[in-house]
Image 1 (spheres, rainbow, N blue to C red):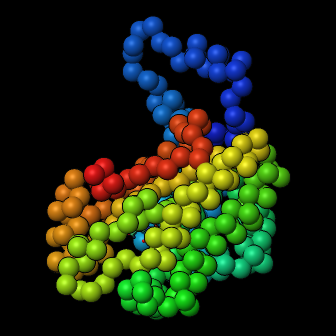
Image 2 (cartoon, helix red, strand yellow; image 1 turned 90 degrees about the vertical axis):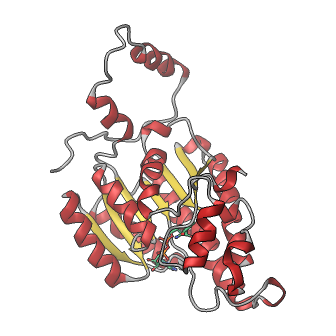
Length: 300
Ligand SMILES: NC(=O)c1ccc[n+]([C@@H]2O[C@H](COP(=O)([O-])OP(=O)(O)OC[C@H]3O[C@@H](n4cnc5c(N)ncnc54)[C@H](O)[C@@H]3O)[C@@H](O)[C@H]2O)c1
């Protein structure tokens, strides 16, 4: 069923007068239950157009599903077109929103510009953006830091950091032209703290230095953009997720869970609510923030 609520245009950052009005409106004497429409208006994304770069990925596709279920039309922008097409069809059928697949390499400015224009023509101006692409391909786990190959370093930085900058540029321009927007960049716990090499056991593998550097870069890129676009009605925030269970070795999973206060690895769905929150009006007073959803991993 199509979500009935349409929030319409994104609001500008609250001005004092309006804030006052909202405070008065929000104060309830009877302490009765909040109306259902409050939840929809606060957390819903009805009437919005969202782009998820890396939308065909494990986390990316779960985010597309949640964003569409919250009422937005969604463009899954991914280098893997067949996967994006398959998932877009699935999510569109499940949510009854318009969900389209767009082939683009996020390290290419030209392809990103084309994607923005294509989305604008098909769905309307994209005013919500999630950056969820990553490279973990050949060479990613190549070796220890002393010998980590420069080519692998550059490839990881290019997709996991430069592409985030380029997508923010391309979609940011469209958001400025449309009067504002909301961006969520996906970093990682490994952008905040070093990986703990002990959880990789005797495998000799560790999450690589290039990934940690790229993900830390995403955090401060987010802060920079939040400040740079503070008067453009664009909120930019960052999600720092912990590790998703993906049939890793039993030893790794056991070590990971033992190190995690909540005692388990994540499912991709664990990040849906946090990203909806950051995209929604509920987070209207948040920009330049890092929301850590990691089962407590970084709490000690
Ligand atoms: N999975 C985890 O455990 C985990 C943990 C912390 C953070 N993260 C971060 O969350 C985000 C999503 O992770 P995921 O597990 O969904 O990753 P994933 O590998 O499943 O998906 C990544 C997607 O990005 C696409 N992609 C790769 N290069 C691209 C490019 N140049 N242009 C466009 N698309 C490209 C891939 O085709 C794929 O669909 C990533 O930024 C990742 O670093 C993941």
